[in-house]
Length: 114
Ligand code: FES
Image (cartoon, rainbow, N blue to C red; front, side):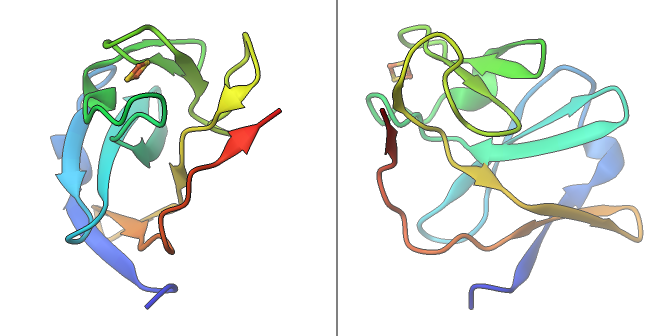
């Protein structure tokens, strides 16, 4: 169901500046980041070449850089600030009772922004 949130982890499991990967369901996996007091969840699969390594990306200015070919995506919008093109999926999160939840995403579509 689309409005369903999936319990992912305890908040304290996410370390500052270090991405972690989690399965949301059989088809979707997330890369979760903590920057300061904020948490971000995005698709762990890069839309450029579909490598599941976003969680290993470097963080800077609320952007993550895919370690495979260096595409840079906003953690807030999923867009690339440097050039138009493919967009990283952003997942809605909620914090409840010390746990982080991710809203189950809808069907996976490939989103290009020109
Ligand atoms: S697979 Fe991520 S930039 Fe190419």
